Image (tube, rainbow over all chains, first blue to last red; front, side, top):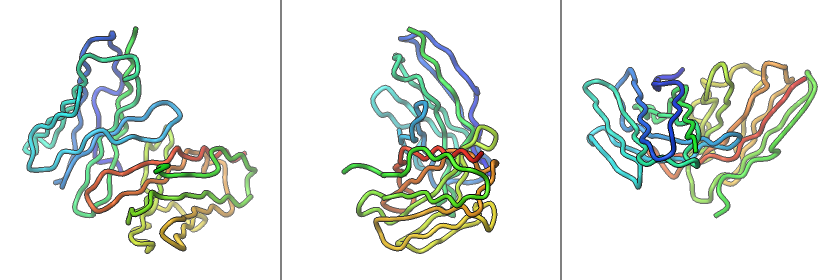
Length: 110
Length: 113
């Protein structure tokens, strides 16, 4: 079953703009992870944020986590054509199984 | 390291046939996961192993599905007999420990006619 739900389902932006997507989940978590999937490929891990962290950065990525609202956001700054992909949040609960959301499809227009 | 290796990359078979998907995890990773991805249901965890032992197979849809991990460097997912609704992309992933990131293979696209 999917615990995480991403919003929006799809996003289209111009190259150079920022892209923001959100993830909401239902139960308490140990950590939350974001993955990227290019068309026809496997998922690639982007960033992991633990339940006691509020914000984390990795290059052009910024992730926030609000455990009181059970939500997370992924911000991609200065987007590039290569950022075109689907982005998934995955929650890691007490059973250490990752539960993936349905994903946000991001299209970056040149 | 070559990453997680899966074979075959594509498989087309007819209903009723046996299908075997293969996975080689990253060396040193203690956890191995099998997922199935479809448009309708998204990414679903089928089963995962820790140190070659199946820990949770609650996601395996039916008795037609079985998975084994005879050693630390090899796992199989078998579907017998296959049905058209099994058509999906099957991913294998490995992880060095609990609560760590998972490394995904390129997937096997299965089509059952």
